[in-house]
Image 1 (cartoon, rainbow, N blue to C red):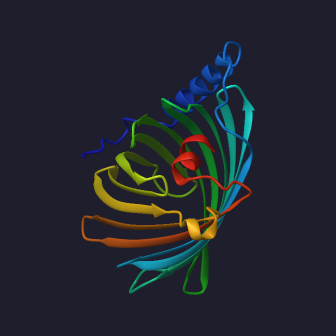
Image 2 (image 1 turned 30 degrees about the vertical axis):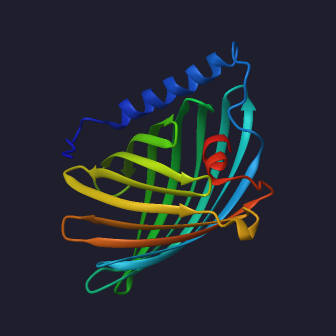
Length: 243
């Protein structure tokens, strides 16, 4: 899908995020249901490989109910990238927060902010850059399908800003296995991906395994991720839609 520059400006994203937050808190006055069953925690390790390089990352999140229909997610991560050919090595750290508004039988709206720091070594010099990312996404639940629309904007201390749009659809083959496809782009660069998540019952629903394949203009990538969930032994479907 073509993505047009300047369509989703930083100021526009900030206003949308603020509007969603205000709407969420406004709804607390009349809401009478939960948007998250209970606080929960996740720790994940992920590997990524593509034609330009490979990376290993560690991430974690903590999600808490705030009030009726509303929850907050606190996120943090570390990553190391090893470039191939002429691409440089780099490392990065990130922290972020999302606020989400969810109804179990309808869907979820989520607005987020993420701050990242990266460092790249070029010869004997070190190149540092900071980034801020604003995101807004919505997922509609319909029977065994999740339909996603997402938009984000990243501002960099050095370099041009980037816009990302994504749309996707996932299907629960059963309560512990989900597969999906998505299409997106960063400015004029289109990308597509296939992915699946499996939560083996043999591990008492404590562990989830995800794998994905992405492709676009001139590059293909592979990802695999292993996640451990603390204290919430529920099905994958309930984990995604209620936790």
